[in-house]
Image (cartoon, rainbow, N blue to C red; front, side, top):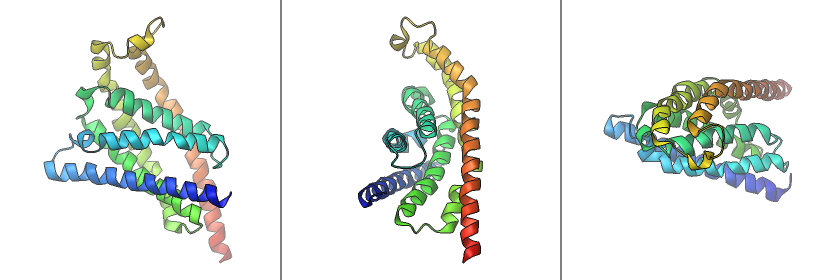
Length: 219
């Protein structure tokens, strides 16, 4: 990888690290100050929408070979998160104060303040082993929390509002299904698509941590 590409990736991951750390700070500050979990979107929602939208760059990074991840898994994660965040949470004000938003934002932020610093420090070639371990271990707990009581439960809770408002009806004109039906299908498929990504992360974990263990043995 050229020095210019490496510098770009370092800057991108550093900025994402800072952004997600700020998002986590805002979510937790709101919780501490108000003694309530209902202000997560008001405190950090727009920032998280921006960070998640900008993460489409990671799909491009994989597609052009800038990173070895490829485009499929980054696209699956980006597409699922972005639809949930922009189409549902941002699009339906009635769900923005639900506990599931707090749970999702907390799980996402904790995941990303580990993942992005790991990538940034790896660009420098000096990533501490404990950060590598956290990167490939914390997801085991954080991803299911973000999925079940977070994303899926909130999408289920949003269904009555989607139906009542005929949400995004114009976009589905002429199609055999409505957006309401689309979200129902997404809820049915979500666990299977998520499981594919989850298993992929376990494969990565085995590969990365075994390499870390081999380097330790050589030292």
